[in-house]
Image (cartoon, one colour):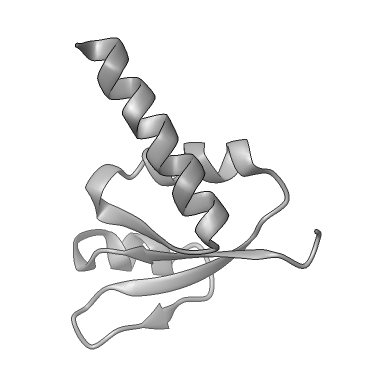
Length: 79
């Protein structure tokens, strides 16, 4: 669905950098929320993983589930 969006909260630690690259919704704690066009689930997972704990997917739930599955795979591979 070309109109589907992924909402991501970026920590205050990287919020300024994220804000330089597009429209953000500033939060009271210094973090920012960004809506990204969601055209590809694999892109979404790669995008969030590159920021490690500094990024959290707020939705959609499907992407949260795919991300959780990928993290579990990475943990199994490193064990």
